[in-house]
Image 1 (cartoon, one colour):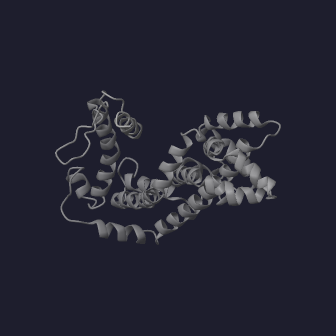
Image 2 (cartoon, one colour; image 1 turned 30 degrees about the vertical axis):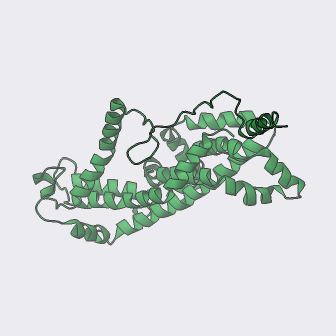
Length: 325
């Protein structure tokens, strides 16, 4: 009994510890820790070329905005007597803003309201139609589906300026030239938004979830409104942002289909003011160039606010569209 007891105890210890007799347990590698006890992690290397490229893109984007903001504080005389990227004598920003809102009986406010109408209705409608069409192309099987998808891709490559004259002739036959419908109807079509929503819906909507909803007795409209729209919300906001910027900055189409200054958007109205400020060769020019610059500065503020508000949805929409489930 005394001879076997140590062996039994030794075997039990080996079974509990998992160590073989006469062997040492291999040491696991430990991370190097910094002066504060944190694990040392290798940081990715910095690329000088990418840093320089990003700096150039940042300067290319911000310098025109900086010039616009500084020039809006100058009078008509100091615009030509002072450097472009530095302030002139006096601070005339509030005077320029007041003149913008009161010049020509406050027509700038009219143009701003027209632009808001065209952008909200046009961009909102285009986003809704693009979401519905993209969902249908991604999740339904029907005859001509591939042909329709190819036509959408082909429509993206056609510039809007090539369709301006045919659009004018078509609207002229319909009798809606020089009406808000002539601007709103083309804004409701967004081939790029439709293509983007089709790609996004393909990855973001699991087919099993839709089939489960159909088995539970839900109709197609209910499935789209209660399930699909919630999952497609990031993509919807992304399309909304793109179409909002495109509609807000639309110039060529309103210039062709509108003749009444009371229906002009900001782009066409500010171009009209700029023509008055230039005055052809200089004779008869009206000193309203600060109004053009200040009006342009005020016109981009809603886009900046919209981008800052929708930025997180825009980023998540692009990221989700590029991840395969």
